[in-house]
Length: 381
Ligand code: ARG
Image 1 (cartoon, helix red, strand yellow):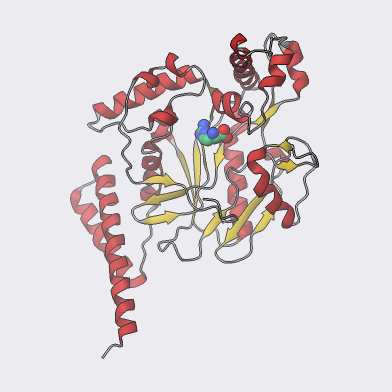
Image 2 (cartoon, helix red, strand yellow; image 1 turned 90 degrees about the horizontal axis):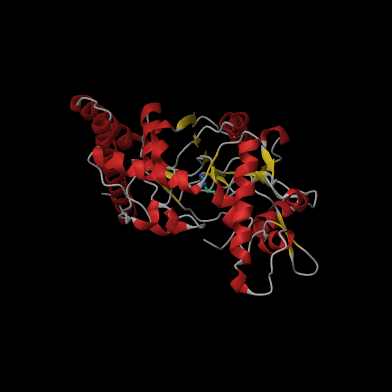
């Protein structure tokens, strides 16, 4: 006779396996349906998955299932305005990476491939998944593969990007030292399961950066501003058919306002509006001169101009909004409801000049999707 402990354990295992099988079924059915795969083929595949789950407690996506899941996760990302291109996502299967060094290598390959000399290719590299979220798993500690360090100075002000203050301290504790500029790229930090994290300096040739200039304001370049070319989001969990890919860095290209109206403009980031206003000779003594708004526009002009001039893919918010309307329309044509989160879709510059501002989308969460996960090095979520 089984003892109670063993019985409980077995019951928990069965519950877990059933739930996983249900998630797998839901995904495989959508996969089969959208790709017009014969129902019999999907049924066969599902019985194979059922045996694998029964035997091992998990299952393995085929490369095709993995790739389509990553695309669907993008299509379902309600906060993303760039989803017109969801079906062209390029998927690298790096599930074979076993060591932190293997993972770093996969990440560097991704950076080189996706940067593509400035003609950015929307891409994702997917490392081995975990089924059980309590199990050891692969994590990249960086929020994005390329981010600038932030250093708290004697007088309490921050040199660099204040968003990176905590991770910068963590990197320093691991033995990394930055050059001490406002634009030091942080190292890559990889953690395999419960092992201690390892850091890797990112080879400089993999980091495309754009020095910012303005088409008419010649003094603009004296601000010494720059930004990196590619936003590689590296801290999100990709969930497909009940499997959790906790390390799956992905990238699209920038919409100009992310840099010009947020990263460089927010008072709690690089806070550049006062400097841009001064350079433009604006009257900053009263809010009602709208010097902030005027500085904001020129900062955004500089971002778009510089990326374009350097041959680095970027999109302005007017074009992105039109592309999003087209995406929504295509979704409706295919019989699906386009979902979105309005507060994220509207651009932070002149929102009411774009169609997204005047349209409501349903904010329904669907899977596959990309989810936030707990920051591995901090008590913050
Ligand atoms: N907003 C983030 C940043 O400014 C990037 C998020 C992803 N953006 C994108 N265009 N794919 O760095």
